[in-house]
View 1 (cartoon, helix red, strand yellow):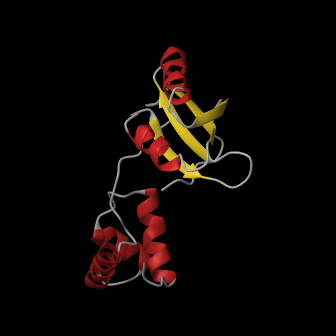
View 2 (cartoon, one colour; view 1 turned 45 degrees about the vertical axis):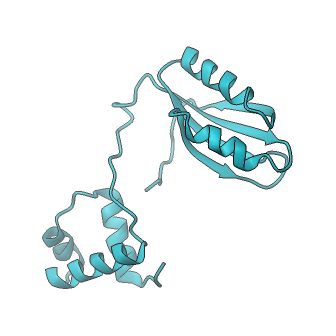
Length: 146
């Protein structure tokens, strides 16, 4: 990743709020020439700082989904195998390694409690998984995810 200056951070902040913002409009908001902003975007993309652009659904569009954080304790040296299994579960949005009592923290999305329950059963059955703790999300109060 490249070193980011204040202009790069502003570009990223504007695109985080609206990834469909046209370059000309972005340049106008920043008080810069369109070619300058385009060159910076190209550099940020080439360096991997901007890895891509994605769709972010509103809470209304996701209404009815069950979201949960699952904390997973695994046997030593089983992390690679467990992660390989988790990659195949479409309900797993993210998996983070952690320090402390739990080895992995996964964010899940399921269409129903029944589907979440089945996913938790599949995770619990993975060889190397010793224990799970599930925290069901009730509402989102802050979301700064890009």
